[in-house]
Length: 324
Image 1 (cartoon, one colour):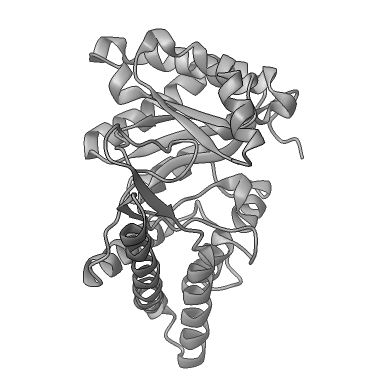
Image 2 (image 1 turned 180 degrees about the vertical axis):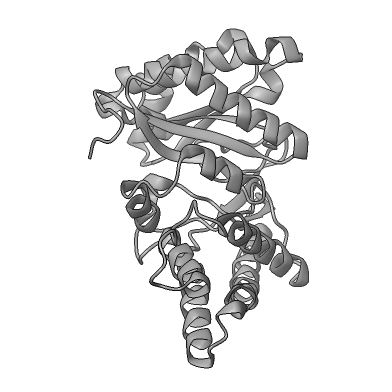
């Protein structure tokens, strides 16, 4: 595995995946693969490893131990950027570390960084409602604007993909239209804040993600993506929902510093959107049992609604709750 990693690095490949671990006896290999490589990503698929309800917590405990081991044995504890635990994720997700394709024809899928579209839609909706004095209408306006933006750009991306398909030996497998933030702009968390402040009033407390209304906004965003794709006849794959990666979004990071939300709040939002828990920092001494129960919560939510979810938490070595 180290030889594969070195070849990929030499060839300039930044990310590669070995796919999901689907057998409990191999979960212990996750630490070895992540800690001895620089490029390789992988996941543990709970829906494949858990064979019956009586084994569910035991499997989650093993996966939780892998998360803790990677945090304490990788440089700076950052190895968990390349490892996550999933449930009900199907072949074709282009986002790492979950990404994998089942054997067969050569295929490609596209993942987007579309957070700026939400910022644009939310900003325009808020400005219009403030001007008209119709704050109660801001969520509907944001949804309409987001659908229009997504429809436009999804078609452009798919057209480019279809050209690649005709000129290569790779088959187009779809676009993961997930609302995925980029490090530019103010972030998805900021868009949530602006929308909630418009509805509740800027002078009110509790306008950050995690407060009332967050689940509704999460649903609106995910519905906008999927509705826009359906209306434009765009092929979707993967999660195609809202992503809330705390360490990869300025607005979410700021809200986290303020203590605006808990991990359970993000899991609640994932019930109506996509992905699950992503790049959320937790205390380095978090117990194996608490991590396992979080993984089990995620798995049960994914199984109940047959929706792809993943959990990528980042235990911070020597970090404690409240540390900055």
